[in-house]
Image 1 (cartoon, rainbow, N blue to C red):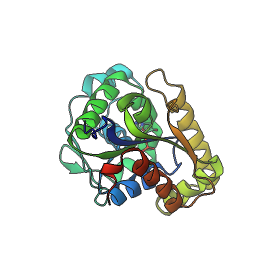
Image 2: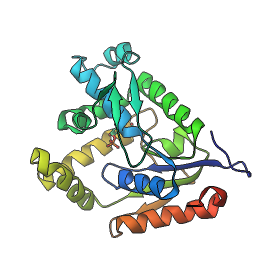
Image 3: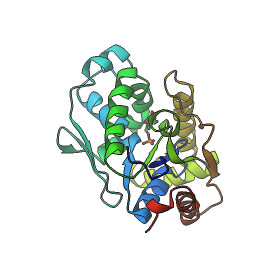
Length: 233
Ligand code: DC
């Protein structure tokens, strides 16, 4: 892991429920600072996509565990050039399909899945200053991150944002988007291992009434405050 002269871990952890603006915020902060960016949700989605494609019963933790080490997984850490690869195939679009979204909570609750992906996430963090977004970054993956954000937004606002992204491709209404988000958050928050929860020392930001730039500015200001030597851009 990269540390500054005071020993602080040079990382921003962005956790929160689905659709709270984590990806746009984390990417924006990373681009602003010239840091790397890791979308850990994309990694859980990529593994889920592969399992479904292979015909693995994703509701059976033993079946998932038996296959978890098989595919190679690669993820771009450039906030301006995203890409997720499974066995060398780019799957950035496929991992956003509704059938992947419906199954990803079950797959990500399997301990062997978290073990494999958290190891990859920590390996990436060894290499450079990084903004990492997910559900368990501030609590489990990088509890020592210098800046820890818990990003939330009202369900209605989250659903409107997600429906705007999805309606074009899948024709899903705001109401059913809201129901799907709530159901996934419930599964992610109540699972036994590394549930979605705010770390004691994370700062909560409610993005409901804020623009994306306002949220990014708040996070960048915290980085400048806590690890000034790494916030030079
Ligand atoms: O951020 P996202 O919606 O792409 O994440 C997809 C799923 O992956 C989410 O419903 C739960 C899981 N996830 C997780 O368990 N831990 C993370 N650090 C990130 C995502």
